[in-house]
Image (cartoon, rainbow, N blue to C red; front, side, top):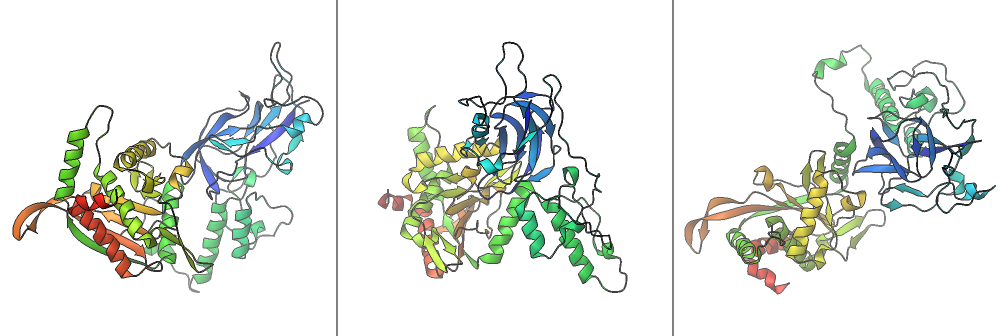
Length: 459
């Protein structure tokens, strides 16, 4: 007899609680090996392939392509222990497992739930074995019959409240409902078999709020809302929206800026590339030079390489500089992180920026490469603009913005001349320092841009 095991969307790490199904890699009836990727999902941080820790026959899939599922939601079921064909080993037993009673229970999966992210063997309480009659030739899908729900996910006003189990898997969904006093029995789930998703609860909360705030007299509420395309705030766009909104809510930020003569910096870059250019040595980019300037400035002003522990009411000054840089991709704005930037020279920083930028463009950045930054460099000059007021990348304490470098009239050595000028903007958390520290940091950066030899003191 075969055992039908349920594989749920695993914990994706880095605080991620949901993912969108981009592409199924297997069909019902396919035979899968242990740790074979079965589905490609997109989180708020990256695109990843999810491997199945079981080997056997796929008996059911849960969720269509484009559906958003919370962590812990069933992805698929696999019948393991099916009768093998002649000359073939039995399926479903991971490598190193011993056959016999109890052995499969101890080693029924590899424990690897994400490519490149080993999690160790899962706890026994998380392994559910559902026996079901399955023949060797025809896999039997395991589907719990349920009424087909309405696509709309709104409270059923005035309906009889059915009691009993609620189709909710995610504890975050239950917590959100409790916080807003929402009865989950009155919410219709839009997920498979009536599963209540986070979006269903949020929609129900919005509907309830609108009903409470609506005037007594009937008013056409849609009259003031123009018709147009509605784009869901999810995936990368949703993650960016949440993070920026949180930054504005929690961080009392301030911005200072200065114009700098970048003529000497551009000349130094040209000299570096002219002297060391080769087929194997990449050219030094302006972004790499500015990143090295930032690490030198943070060594002088460590207050800006910190974060605030609001609950403990403490400023945490961080010993390492993990430098993030903003990169625009087809999936949206992402911020890859150069680890240990404080210990790298210009060539090393430039090579890492190039590697991460290519990974960002191809959608291959991992969650680990998009988190853990302590300071961010934002070169919005590539969009042809001079200035901006950057929003701090929460929970960091500062961000340096760099505008385009363009020829402008400039007083140089007492005479009017045409020079390469750039505007630098620093947005900082006013809790970690005052304007004097922020101004000192920005002035040091500007001095290094105008006189690159200033950097020699810290190299």
